Length: 578
Image (cartoon, rainbow, N blue to C red):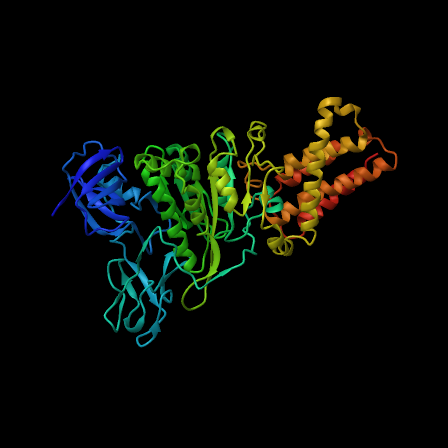
């Protein structure tokens, strides 16, 4: 019997009878073939969540189950692609329907016409299992896309030949008759299994000084980035996507403004990756579900991004996933739950929102992939959160803090003061500090842990003294206290702040970060020593020291050791003052 639509409410519809379908199976609805999935059964009646605009859909429209859940097709051609929330390439949709996506428009996730040069690494007679590397394709110059045995497939290779293939052509076959392909399919809501999870003890260098020095993130770690409107959440994630030391970047624009995603596309295509000399877009996958696209597809977009990231992790790559913003994902859950008339929790979010969010964060991690040869990869998850009014007590932020490994809290007052990144160092934290500090010190200076501790201590003392200064006035304070205010202001401006429009300052290597921290602290120590000896703060060459500090910040990244030499010269200038 043909299933038909019996009820429509916005993006939800009911159809019956759907007796042979399963929960989360994809369906096609109506003459336009609207894409949806089954999210609830009540006897023969199925509730459908439609990923497209339901305008014009009528009761009695035919419903056809595809017999499979929402699946990502993973293979060569992913890098540089721009996908919508359910995995359709926007370029392909534009060819089919023009500048505006037509309801029911379809396009394959991977280019089925493009031919790839495959180099086989195993031979006939070899025994292979899930995750084993069959060979590789040079997807981009210098980037090896490893072709893996799909999960659930194992046996003896009967044939496997190097050559040029499309993703729809078999590259070989097992003795049991199973075909081998360049691409594989994976349900996006199911985490990909690994051989063994590893400790998060290797830092992900972001190029942003406040994160690398004060609140570092580990490869495979998770960070929540909450902030009110205008605090720079999107800019922070753009900077991380551009400059973080990751092999692959997956950027998920979940419910954000279309002009922001257009800016990402424009900037990424123009930005040159210093490691390859090519466009940074060549190592990036964009998943786009902007604010004018169907709300319910936002929920799927985050899972799609994670499925793609796990696929590259299984090849042995370090993947950074940027989600902007997780609040829009939670709002999609709330919208769906309200239409299903489920019991609401705090602020209307469904009661299972926290558990769903926790399961999402748990898909990050560093691990040894299944199969041979042994490969180690990582999925690092950075999630922007948009609390209404900047209220961090709201449910999505609090649920994130319970499971995330760190907090980069953005402050509206710092943003208005043009401090970028506008990170509140008094509220932010990282649980990875102890684990990653040895590696950061090895890559920069043995003093790294001491520099971090002293910078935080000076900033804390500065916050206390600024409260006193607001009551008494800075001129009434002792010179040593005024010195703390002066040096802390330099640290905030030149160490913690970065200029995204200055190519020498937008990205800071660890050696330069250490040099700036050391310079600020050494200047403080030298000036404090002279004050104790009886000098007057107004007689010290503070202005010259500030200029030296600003020059080091604006200086281009140099060879190891040279930034420290610049520090020594600046301190010598301070000592030479009257």
